[in-house]
Length: 137
Image (tube, rainbow, N blue to C red):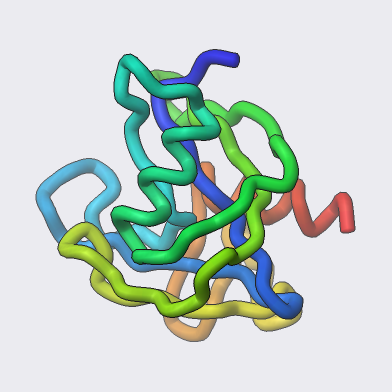
């Protein structure tokens, strides 16, 4: 499997981990997202998901399922999505993340191709991964 980046949908007690990216001046600054990031050349997509999750939120995960490859809306990046469970649960965010939330799928409100979680809007690739997963379950 090839990918430019990887993300994880981490499920714990029927909730999933959602992050708000810090404002670092990149195209994803401030967006709601799943933990993840860019693949290093020597890594598999799965290794990327595990490493990036640990770097961003400080928890160790176990990948349980490959959910598929998704493309950013401008089709420039291929992102592998994985389902995971927590091995450790103490979240400790790094400088790339401004907030984190454990969210129940029932808390998401769908509106015009987005999910709303309180005052936060989830769109694009994260929306599509969550929508596909919720349709499967």
